[in-house]
Image: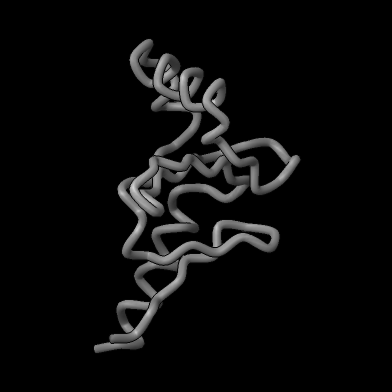
Amino acid sequence: MIGIYLHLGQDKVVKSSSVLGVFDMDTSTVQKNTRTFLNKAEKEGRVINVSFELPKSFVVCLEEGKIIIYISQLSTATLEKRAENFKSILV
């Protein structure tokens, strides 16, 4: 089986199979439930900032049985294109 990785920005890559969702920071954090989820994860040390630039998205991953959230300066569209490019290589 081929391991496919998604580059989230800076020097961070994750296995694409670990990605549960990619969310736009501006539109998804409007909801109180999302803000509560992110705040709780941050307090538990499960949030990793990929860059110190303005965050545009967050990526929820399941790694070793734990939910990890990566904050990225890349837009959801850019991350989606990167994921699609890997899929087209395999076809």
